[in-house]
Length: 86
Length: 298
Image (cartoon, rainbow over all chains, first blue to last red; front, side, top):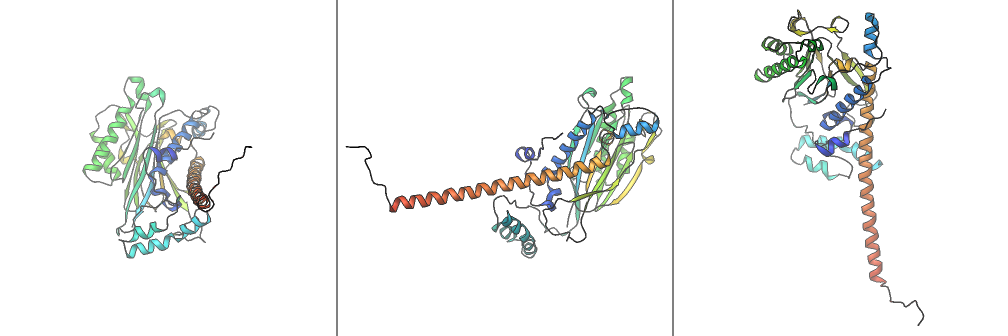
Protein backbone atom coordinates (compact mmCIF):
# COMPACT_ATOMS: atom_id res chain seq x y z
CA UNK A 1 0.00 0.00 0.00
CA UNK A 2 2.95 2.28 0.57
CA UNK A 3 4.11 4.43 -2.32
CA UNK A 4 7.58 5.51 -3.15
CA UNK A 5 7.65 9.04 -1.89
CA UNK A 6 9.00 11.30 -4.56
CA UNK A 7 10.18 14.23 -2.50
CA UNK A 8 13.80 13.18 -2.93
CA UNK A 9 13.27 12.79 -6.62
CA UNK A 10 11.87 16.32 -6.87
CA UNK A 11 14.87 17.72 -5.11
CA UNK A 12 17.42 15.87 -7.16
CA UNK A 13 15.94 16.48 -10.55
CA UNK A 14 14.16 19.75 -10.91
CA UNK A 15 13.45 21.70 -7.80
CA UNK A 16 15.49 23.36 -5.15
CA UNK A 17 14.09 22.81 -1.67
CA UNK A 18 13.96 25.81 0.59
CA UNK A 19 12.45 24.03 3.52
CA UNK A 20 13.50 25.16 6.96
CA UNK A 21 10.66 23.99 9.16
CA UNK A 22 7.02 23.13 8.87
CA UNK A 23 6.05 26.76 8.86
CA UNK A 24 7.81 27.14 5.52
CA UNK A 25 6.57 23.89 4.13
CA UNK A 26 3.82 25.28 1.96
CA UNK A 27 6.04 27.82 0.27
CA UNK A 28 8.15 24.97 -1.03
CA UNK A 29 7.51 23.96 -4.61
CA UNK A 30 9.12 20.56 -4.11
CA UNK A 31 6.87 19.77 -1.17
CA UNK A 32 3.74 20.73 -3.11
CA UNK A 33 4.87 18.71 -6.13
CA UNK A 34 5.41 15.72 -3.87
CA UNK A 35 1.95 16.30 -2.42
CA UNK A 36 0.32 16.33 -5.86
CA UNK A 37 2.25 13.26 -7.03
CA UNK A 38 1.33 11.33 -3.95
CA UNK A 39 -2.33 12.35 -4.12
CA UNK A 40 -2.58 11.30 -7.78
CA UNK A 41 -0.84 7.98 -7.17
CA UNK A 42 -3.04 7.20 -4.19
CA UNK A 43 -6.18 8.08 -6.14
CA UNK A 44 -5.14 5.85 -9.04
CA UNK A 45 -4.46 3.02 -6.67
CA UNK A 46 -7.92 3.35 -5.12
CA UNK A 47 -9.53 3.68 -8.55
CA UNK A 48 -8.07 0.32 -9.56
CA UNK A 49 -9.44 -1.34 -6.43
CA UNK A 50 -12.30 -3.51 -7.69
CA UNK A 51 -13.92 -4.42 -4.38
CA UNK A 52 -13.87 -1.10 -2.63
CA UNK A 53 -16.75 0.98 -1.35
CA UNK A 54 -15.96 4.28 -3.05
CA UNK A 55 -17.88 7.58 -3.13
CA UNK A 56 -19.05 6.55 -6.59
CA UNK A 57 -20.50 3.38 -5.07
CA UNK A 58 -22.39 5.48 -2.55
CA UNK A 59 -23.73 7.85 -5.21
CA UNK A 60 -24.78 4.95 -7.41
CA UNK A 61 -26.58 3.28 -4.52
CA UNK A 62 -28.41 6.53 -3.76
CA UNK A 63 -29.58 6.68 -7.37
CA UNK A 64 -30.64 3.04 -7.34
CA UNK A 65 -27.74 1.55 -9.27
CA UNK A 66 -25.13 -0.95 -8.20
CA UNK A 67 -21.46 -0.19 -8.72
CA UNK A 68 -18.68 -1.88 -6.82
CA UNK A 69 -15.10 -0.63 -6.59
CA UNK A 70 -13.38 2.53 -7.69
CA UNK A 71 -14.18 4.51 -10.80
CA UNK A 72 -11.58 4.46 -13.56
CA UNK A 73 -11.36 7.90 -15.11
CA UNK A 74 -8.91 10.65 -15.95
CA UNK A 75 -7.42 12.02 -12.75
CA UNK A 76 -6.46 15.67 -12.63
CA UNK A 77 -5.62 17.36 -9.38
CA UNK A 78 -4.08 20.76 -8.81
CA UNK A 79 -2.68 21.26 -5.35
CA UNK A 80 -2.27 24.95 -4.57
CA UNK A 81 -0.98 26.30 -1.30
CA UNK A 82 -1.90 29.87 -0.47
CA UNK A 83 1.23 31.85 0.17
CA UNK A 84 0.65 35.30 1.65
CA UNK A 85 3.79 37.40 1.86
CA UNK A 86 3.51 40.65 3.71
CA UNK B 1 19.92 17.00 17.22
CA UNK B 2 19.17 19.02 20.34
CA UNK B 3 21.68 21.62 19.27
CA UNK B 4 19.96 21.98 15.91
CA UNK B 5 16.60 22.28 17.64
CA UNK B 6 17.97 25.03 19.84
CA UNK B 7 19.40 26.85 16.85
CA UNK B 8 16.12 26.61 14.99
CA UNK B 9 14.41 28.15 18.00
CA UNK B 10 16.88 30.99 17.81
CA UNK B 11 15.83 31.75 14.26
CA UNK B 12 13.04 34.28 15.07
CA UNK B 13 15.59 36.56 16.72
CA UNK B 14 17.57 36.61 13.52
CA UNK B 15 14.42 37.41 11.60
CA UNK B 16 13.61 40.37 13.83
CA UNK B 17 17.12 41.66 13.24
CA UNK B 18 16.71 41.21 9.54
CA UNK B 19 13.79 43.62 9.40
CA UNK B 20 15.82 46.40 10.96
CA UNK B 21 18.96 45.94 8.91
CA UNK B 22 18.18 44.24 5.68
CA UNK B 23 21.69 44.34 4.27
CA UNK B 24 23.32 42.24 6.97
CA UNK B 25 20.36 39.96 7.45
CA UNK B 26 21.61 37.12 5.32
CA UNK B 27 24.95 37.12 7.10
CA UNK B 28 23.25 37.13 10.47
CA UNK B 29 21.09 34.20 9.45
CA UNK B 30 23.85 32.10 7.98
CA UNK B 31 26.52 32.72 10.57
CA UNK B 32 25.00 30.03 12.73
CA UNK B 33 24.63 27.31 10.18
CA UNK B 34 25.05 23.67 10.95
CA UNK B 35 25.01 21.13 8.16
CA UNK B 36 21.56 19.68 7.93
CA UNK B 37 19.89 22.97 8.62
CA UNK B 38 18.64 24.59 5.52
CA UNK B 39 18.51 28.31 5.06
CA UNK B 40 15.14 29.71 4.12
CA UNK B 41 15.14 32.09 1.21
CA UNK B 42 11.86 33.76 2.07
CA UNK B 43 12.34 37.46 2.47
CA UNK B 44 10.23 39.37 4.94
CA UNK B 45 11.20 42.71 3.46
CA UNK B 46 8.29 43.19 1.00
CA UNK B 47 5.76 45.38 2.78
CA UNK B 48 2.63 44.89 0.66
CA UNK B 49 0.43 41.87 1.28
CA UNK B 50 0.32 39.78 -1.83
CA UNK B 51 -1.05 36.30 -2.02
CA UNK B 52 -0.31 33.70 -4.63
CA UNK B 53 -0.49 29.98 -5.11
CA UNK B 54 2.41 27.64 -4.84
CA UNK B 55 0.96 24.97 -7.02
CA UNK B 56 1.63 21.65 -8.66
CA UNK B 57 -0.49 19.50 -10.92
CA UNK B 58 -0.87 15.78 -11.45
CA UNK B 59 -2.54 14.59 -14.62
CA UNK B 60 -3.07 10.86 -15.01
CA UNK B 61 -5.18 10.15 -18.10
CA UNK B 62 -7.10 6.94 -18.23
CA UNK B 63 -5.18 4.53 -20.51
CA UNK B 64 -8.26 3.68 -22.59
CA UNK B 65 -9.04 7.32 -23.32
CA UNK B 66 -6.12 8.17 -25.53
CA UNK B 67 -2.95 10.09 -24.97
CA UNK B 68 -4.42 13.39 -23.83
CA UNK B 69 -7.43 12.07 -21.98
CA UNK B 70 -10.57 14.13 -21.59
CA UNK B 71 -9.45 16.45 -18.84
CA UNK B 72 -7.85 19.84 -19.26
CA UNK B 73 -6.30 22.23 -16.78
CA UNK B 74 -4.39 25.49 -16.61
CA UNK B 75 -2.37 27.49 -14.11
CA UNK B 76 -1.46 31.04 -15.05
CA UNK B 77 2.09 32.33 -14.82
CA UNK B 78 1.25 34.88 -12.13
CA UNK B 79 0.20 31.93 -9.92
CA UNK B 80 -3.17 33.42 -9.12
CA UNK B 81 -5.62 31.54 -11.34
CA UNK B 82 -6.11 27.82 -11.89
CA UNK B 83 -8.81 25.77 -13.50
CA UNK B 84 -9.81 22.24 -14.43
CA UNK B 85 -12.36 20.88 -16.87
CA UNK B 86 -13.56 17.35 -17.50
CA UNK B 87 -14.91 16.46 -20.93
CA UNK B 88 -18.08 14.39 -20.83
CA UNK B 89 -17.35 10.93 -22.22
CA UNK B 90 -20.69 10.40 -23.93
CA UNK B 91 -19.47 12.22 -27.04
CA UNK B 92 -16.95 9.49 -27.85
CA UNK B 93 -19.80 7.24 -29.02
CA UNK B 94 -20.63 9.86 -31.65
CA UNK B 95 -17.05 9.99 -32.88
CA UNK B 96 -16.21 13.30 -31.23
CA UNK B 97 -13.07 13.78 -29.15
CA UNK B 98 -14.45 14.51 -25.69
CA UNK B 99 -11.26 16.27 -24.66
CA UNK B 100 -11.25 18.86 -27.45
CA UNK B 101 -13.97 20.99 -25.90
CA UNK B 102 -12.49 20.96 -22.42
CA UNK B 103 -9.03 21.86 -23.73
CA UNK B 104 -10.37 24.73 -25.82
CA UNK B 105 -12.49 26.01 -22.91
CA UNK B 106 -9.56 26.03 -20.51
CA UNK B 107 -7.33 27.60 -23.16
CA UNK B 108 -9.88 30.37 -23.64
CA UNK B 109 -10.22 30.97 -19.92
CA UNK B 110 -6.46 31.18 -19.48
CA UNK B 111 -6.15 33.56 -22.41
CA UNK B 112 -8.85 35.81 -20.93
CA UNK B 113 -7.21 35.77 -17.50
CA UNK B 114 -3.85 36.79 -18.96
CA UNK B 115 -5.02 39.31 -21.56
CA UNK B 116 -7.55 41.09 -19.35
CA UNK B 117 -5.46 40.62 -16.20
CA UNK B 118 -8.70 39.44 -14.68
CA UNK B 119 -9.33 37.71 -11.37
CA UNK B 120 -13.01 37.08 -11.98
CA UNK B 121 -13.63 33.37 -12.63
CA UNK B 122 -17.15 33.97 -13.92
CA UNK B 123 -15.90 36.42 -16.55
CA UNK B 124 -13.18 33.98 -17.62
CA UNK B 125 -15.55 31.06 -17.95
CA UNK B 126 -18.21 33.13 -19.67
CA UNK B 127 -15.80 34.52 -22.23
CA UNK B 128 -14.31 31.10 -22.92
CA UNK B 129 -17.77 29.55 -23.13
CA UNK B 130 -18.93 31.95 -25.82
CA UNK B 131 -15.70 31.79 -27.82
CA UNK B 132 -15.33 28.00 -27.90
CA UNK B 133 -16.25 26.41 -31.22
CA UNK B 134 -15.45 22.72 -30.64
CA UNK B 135 -18.22 20.16 -30.29
CA UNK B 136 -18.72 18.52 -26.93
CA UNK B 137 -19.54 19.33 -23.33
CA UNK B 138 -17.53 19.54 -20.16
CA UNK B 139 -17.68 20.44 -16.51
CA UNK B 140 -15.49 23.27 -15.29
CA UNK B 141 -14.10 24.69 -12.08
CA UNK B 142 -11.94 27.82 -11.91
CA UNK B 143 -10.38 29.41 -8.84
CA UNK B 144 -8.65 32.77 -8.55
CA UNK B 145 -6.82 34.31 -5.63
CA UNK B 146 -7.73 37.98 -5.30
CA UNK B 147 -5.76 39.38 -2.41
CA UNK B 148 -6.63 37.12 0.49
CA UNK B 149 -9.94 36.14 -1.03
CA UNK B 150 -10.56 33.05 -3.10
CA UNK B 151 -13.04 33.57 -5.90
CA UNK B 152 -14.33 30.47 -7.59
CA UNK B 153 -16.91 29.18 -9.99
CA UNK B 154 -17.95 25.57 -10.30
CA UNK B 155 -20.16 23.97 -12.92
CA UNK B 156 -20.73 20.23 -12.68
CA UNK B 157 -19.04 17.52 -10.68
CA UNK B 158 -15.51 18.85 -10.59
CA UNK B 159 -14.70 20.78 -7.46
CA UNK B 160 -12.24 21.88 -4.86
CA UNK B 161 -11.54 21.31 -1.20
CA UNK B 162 -9.74 23.67 1.13
CA UNK B 163 -7.68 22.28 3.98
CA UNK B 164 -6.72 24.62 6.77
CA UNK B 165 -4.10 24.15 9.40
CA UNK B 166 -5.45 23.89 12.91
CA UNK B 167 -3.34 25.58 15.53
CA UNK B 168 -3.86 24.69 19.13
CA UNK B 169 -4.88 27.66 21.19
CA UNK B 170 -2.08 27.37 23.74
CA UNK B 171 0.58 27.47 21.04
CA UNK B 172 1.91 30.63 19.53
CA UNK B 173 1.06 30.64 15.86
CA UNK B 174 4.35 32.21 14.87
CA UNK B 175 6.44 29.89 16.94
CA UNK B 176 8.67 27.64 14.92
CA UNK B 177 7.78 24.18 16.07
CA UNK B 178 8.62 20.91 14.46
CA UNK B 179 5.30 19.25 15.23
CA UNK B 180 3.39 18.24 12.12
CA UNK B 181 0.33 20.46 11.68
CA UNK B 182 -3.20 19.23 12.11
CA UNK B 183 -5.50 19.66 9.17
CA UNK B 184 -9.20 20.23 8.98
CA UNK B 185 -11.56 20.67 6.10
CA UNK B 186 -12.42 24.34 5.79
CA UNK B 187 -14.60 24.17 2.70
CA UNK B 188 -15.68 21.72 0.04
CA UNK B 189 -17.84 22.11 -3.02
CA UNK B 190 -20.75 19.78 -3.67
CA UNK B 191 -21.29 18.25 -7.08
CA UNK B 192 -24.08 19.59 -9.26
CA UNK B 193 -25.84 16.83 -11.18
CA UNK B 194 -29.06 16.53 -13.16
CA UNK B 195 -29.25 12.84 -12.34
CA UNK B 196 -26.75 10.11 -11.47
CA UNK B 197 -23.60 10.22 -13.64
CA UNK B 198 -24.96 13.20 -15.63
CA UNK B 199 -23.36 16.36 -14.25
CA UNK B 200 -24.29 19.89 -15.17
CA UNK B 201 -22.20 20.69 -18.21
CA UNK B 202 -21.28 23.49 -20.55
CA UNK B 203 -21.28 23.08 -24.30
CA UNK B 204 -23.12 21.82 -27.34
CA UNK B 205 -26.87 21.22 -26.86
CA UNK B 206 -26.60 21.75 -23.12
CA UNK B 207 -29.03 24.09 -21.43
CA UNK B 208 -26.57 24.88 -18.65
CA UNK B 209 -24.51 28.05 -18.85
CA UNK B 210 -21.80 29.61 -16.66
CA UNK B 211 -24.45 31.66 -14.86
CA UNK B 212 -25.97 28.41 -13.54
CA UNK B 213 -22.71 27.58 -11.79
CA UNK B 214 -22.05 28.08 -8.11
CA UNK B 215 -19.87 31.05 -7.27
CA UNK B 216 -17.87 31.37 -4.08
CA UNK B 217 -15.96 34.10 -2.28
CA UNK B 218 -13.94 32.62 0.55
CA UNK B 219 -11.49 34.23 2.99
CA UNK B 220 -8.11 32.52 2.85
CA UNK B 221 -5.21 32.34 5.26
CA UNK B 222 -1.53 31.80 4.77
CA UNK B 223 -0.79 28.10 4.41
CA UNK B 224 -4.23 26.96 3.28
CA UNK B 225 -4.21 24.17 0.73
CA UNK B 226 -6.66 24.19 -2.15
CA UNK B 227 -7.09 20.85 -3.89
CA UNK B 228 -8.77 21.41 -7.23
CA UNK B 229 -9.77 18.17 -8.89
CA UNK B 230 -11.98 16.55 -11.48
CA UNK B 231 -14.40 13.75 -10.70
CA UNK B 232 -11.67 11.17 -11.25
CA UNK B 233 -10.43 12.14 -7.80
CA UNK B 234 -13.70 13.15 -6.20
CA UNK B 235 -15.44 9.88 -7.10
CA UNK B 236 -12.59 7.84 -5.66
CA UNK B 237 -11.59 9.62 -2.47
CA UNK B 238 -13.83 10.34 0.48
CA UNK B 239 -13.12 13.58 2.29
CA UNK B 240 -11.65 11.71 5.24
CA UNK B 241 -9.26 9.92 2.88
CA UNK B 242 -8.23 13.22 1.33
CA UNK B 243 -7.33 14.58 4.75
CA UNK B 244 -5.56 11.32 5.58
CA UNK B 245 -3.46 11.62 2.41
CA UNK B 246 -2.42 15.16 3.30
CA UNK B 247 -1.52 14.10 6.83
CA UNK B 248 0.53 11.23 5.36
CA UNK B 249 2.37 13.59 3.03
CA UNK B 250 3.21 15.95 5.86
CA UNK B 251 4.53 13.04 7.85
CA UNK B 252 6.66 11.73 4.95
CA UNK B 253 8.16 15.14 4.35
CA UNK B 254 8.84 15.48 8.06
CA UNK B 255 10.64 12.12 8.08
CA UNK B 256 12.53 13.01 4.90
CA UNK B 257 13.75 16.29 6.39
CA UNK B 258 14.69 14.64 9.65
CA UNK B 259 16.63 11.89 7.89
CA UNK B 260 18.32 14.33 5.60
CA UNK B 261 19.47 16.59 8.39
CA UNK B 262 20.41 13.62 10.53
CA UNK B 263 22.50 12.23 7.69
CA UNK B 264 24.22 15.53 7.06
CA UNK B 265 24.95 15.94 10.76
CA UNK B 266 26.35 12.39 10.92
CA UNK B 267 28.69 13.11 8.01
CA UNK B 268 29.80 16.34 9.70
CA UNK B 269 30.78 14.60 12.93
CA UNK B 270 32.40 11.70 11.07
CA UNK B 271 34.59 14.06 9.07
CA UNK B 272 35.48 15.92 12.24
CA UNK B 273 36.41 12.68 13.99
CA UNK B 274 38.59 11.47 11.12
CA UNK B 275 40.38 14.84 10.93
CA UNK B 276 40.98 14.75 14.67
CA UNK B 277 42.39 11.21 14.55
CA UNK B 278 44.63 12.09 11.61
CA UNK B 279 46.08 15.08 13.41
CA UNK B 280 46.61 13.16 16.65
CA UNK B 281 48.26 10.20 14.93
CA UNK B 282 50.50 12.47 12.87
CA UNK B 283 51.58 14.33 16.00
CA UNK B 284 52.23 11.04 17.73
CA UNK B 285 54.37 9.86 14.82
CA UNK B 286 56.21 13.18 14.84
CA UNK B 287 57.22 12.98 18.48
CA UNK B 288 57.58 9.22 18.72
CA UNK B 289 58.87 8.16 15.31
CA UNK B 290 58.86 4.43 14.74
CA UNK B 291 62.20 2.70 14.91
CA UNK B 292 63.18 -0.01 12.55
CA UNK B 293 63.02 -3.26 14.43
CA UNK B 294 64.09 -6.46 12.96
CA UNK B 295 61.65 -9.08 14.24
CA UNK B 296 63.21 -12.10 12.60
CA UNK B 297 66.16 -13.85 14.09
CA UNK B 298 69.56 -12.98 12.74
